[in-house]
Length: 109
Image 1 (cartoon, rainbow, N blue to C red):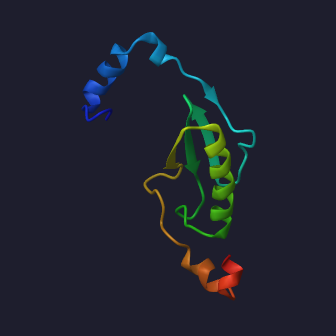
Image 2: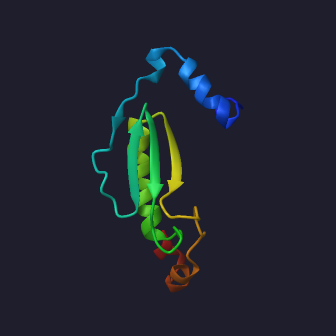
């Protein structure tokens, strides 16, 4: 909902805005072909969709790519929405199997 308006009233609210607010600018980041993240920018708001099986589990690859994506988004947008490309789940949490395979704390850094 926008500004606390119900979903039904949100559409009416948006239609009531002057036409200059309805203009949209769609663009993508220079490197939108990451393994895990897809980035789309509309009206200076980046929608970052993560799609990593199983369950968008957090691991070193995901953190590394997200760091690069976040740096780029921070330079080219004024806000970000992080969403999941997987059905029925946002994020399963830390991938404990991968964490257990690390030999030291330094390897994780």
